[in-house]
Amino acid sequence: MLKNENKIGKMQNKTTDFDISGKIAVVTGASEGIGRAIALGLAGAGADLILCSRRREKLLEVKNEISLMGRNADVYVVDIRNPVEIDGLADYVRTVVGRVDILINNAGYAVSVPAWSVSENDWDAMVDTGLKGVLFCSKAIGRWMREQH
Image (tube, rainbow, N blue to C red; front, side, top):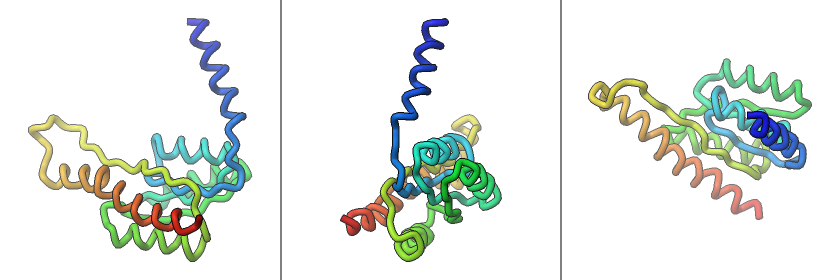
């Protein structure tokens, strides 16, 4: 066990070698869980962020944590199941932020019930978030990223 702890310590030290200062990252699902951790990790590596989720209050908490790290973060409330809202995010990035270097399609939705208890609405929300949202975010933000270069 001591051997593994030593490996973990070495891995944690490696994050200091990861420098993305001056980059701007969009992170969907940034209000909690893995998305929050990714956003904080990117900020720790020097990036500024656009934090996206349906939960404004939680996004503001993550923004405050990032501010304490000395990085900038904008909050953009979006439901990525809706392509019109995704287009609004892309317009915001283009007109207000000016560019984006990194897109993290992290938003997800899961229902924790047995399969026989999953409703059609639950299923649609999972598929629309995990598939439709990823595709349309990639299209809208990716198009803008291509135009930057």
